[in-house]
Length: 563
Image (cartoon, rainbow, N blue to C red; front, top):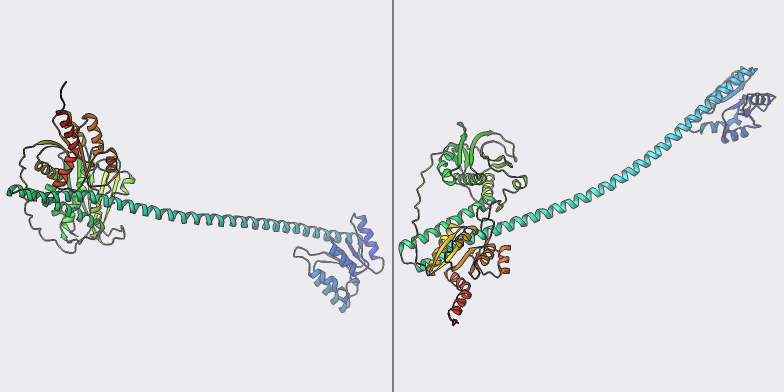
């Protein structure tokens, strides 16, 4: 407690009173000493008014003004009985700038003085508590700022790492897309090369055979085979163009009820006897604006896929309903939803994601080109619609075509002329016997003619298993001539190995229109490979090369002198 009462005995009396009450009291001899004590720290100040009235109190007034926000120093001021206006005005000003003031008028009772001083001390101690709370709050705020700064730094680091991961993921996705494009391109070129080499084989060899045939009927059969090969090539090209959506479709209004109903016989002829076709076509079905030929091809592709997905038979449902204003793939307007539904094996998600890729197929080699669904996709998109596939393993597959509604009523279709069927081939007398292993019927028929022209009889097998069965019955075979790529799980290289094991010394000649790993395996195994397409001369040279070691061995055996 600071005490400033320079006149009389007020100072010593108050100091003695405070000490008896258990408080520390410091007598100040001047205003400067009082300010110094306040600077050092005090709980309250007792001041006689005569010590602070007038201009000498400027230093105290300045100290009061610069207190920190939590501080409001309590002052107990002892005043006199002077009631003059000048004294009252000075006292009023003193109370105003000191702020926290308790006025005691002389004479004052000791208990009143003690009460005022203790009240001032309690108020000051509450201020100290507030100071402590403020300091704690500042420390907490500083700690919080530190935590926020640290967390912000962590988040910035995490964001940088995330941005780096996103950039790396984008690079990986770009690389994956590039790899997928290269894979699709490889499938595309390999599949096109294989199929077109077969077609070119039929045409090139057929042209060579025409030069050697004079019989009109036989020449006509060869030309029919060539025409069929050309038609297959045109269909293959049309499927590729449909997938790439670069083929000009001849769109016209089509009545789906009449069009799909007219395909019933074609579908029944293309499917097995244990596969039924059921139609559910709405009576009020809208006409659609499409190319009817491409629609037939798309439905035939879907029906064949559905048939192959039902190895034990089943039902294919063709259902068509009106779909007003679907919002799929950005489509707007009226469409007809044409669905092909089967109850077959279904497809897992990873297969569904790739079914529209060209030459992607899960079928055995020779059982599918992988262009069927690619044609369906291209046809639907180029027609202004879309295609959806929904499948579940063990539950079947639904392929839905959304086809745009036509603005006009379709006209009745023109009847289609029936095509002539080629007659059976005339057998030729063999000079030797070749086991021909080829799954493509047209290629097999032409190769059989080429072999006949060279003087060989032919036994035809469509797979490696069938070829081994033909060898098992002990018939005389001079040469096994097989395609490398075949269905059934065993390719031509595997067949050659099995033939060597079962009939050592029996020559094997392989052929292929697709340079793949199996072709490399054939070269590594020392088996001669005749590339497709080939002509009669190429075949004769290859067969002569394959038979030469065996004939040399036969001549050597014939020249031996028996003991």
